[in-house]
Image 1 (cartoon, rainbow, N blue to C red):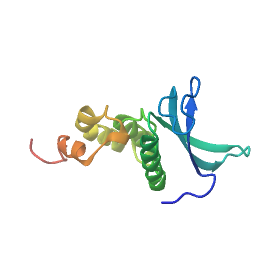
Image 2 (tube, helix red, strand yellow; image 1 turned 180 degrees about the vertical axis):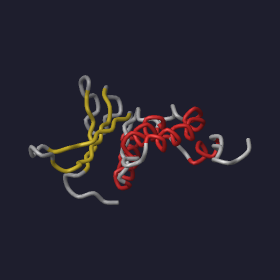
Image 3 (tube, rainbow, N blue to C red; image 1 turned 180 degrees about the horizontal axis):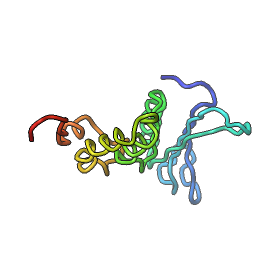
Amino acid sequence: MKQGQGQTSVYFSHTGPCRDPEDHRHCPGRWRGAISLGFGPGGKRLRKYVTARTKTAVRAKLQDLREELATGVRPKEAYTVADAVEEWLAHGLSGRSPKTVAMNRYTLRPVTGMIGKRPLRKLTAADVRAAPSTPTAGSAA
């Protein structure tokens, strides 16, 4: 997908003197990439940055970031499945009785016990399938 002017940039950031101004092959530093997210309330440009050792790796990270932004899902790196479950129990069940929230917490306990520490960004369908099936009300265990 082609980005418009000013939306994406890839550049080399030196940490020492430049030894190869054309390709930066032996220069100390890292390749950096940025995607524009528009402008904030104060008029300042909002950007998301990625870094890597090679230009190709930065472009791959930018492509991943573009796909992530297109889906609208942008959890923080440290946001875990357990954090998402707790947030859902605290705010996603508004209007429900405390007993319903407690039942959902109890029902999800085996799942969060197995995959609760997994970062939400790295969660796969295989992780969810590997989680134990939770007992339903009325089933004999």
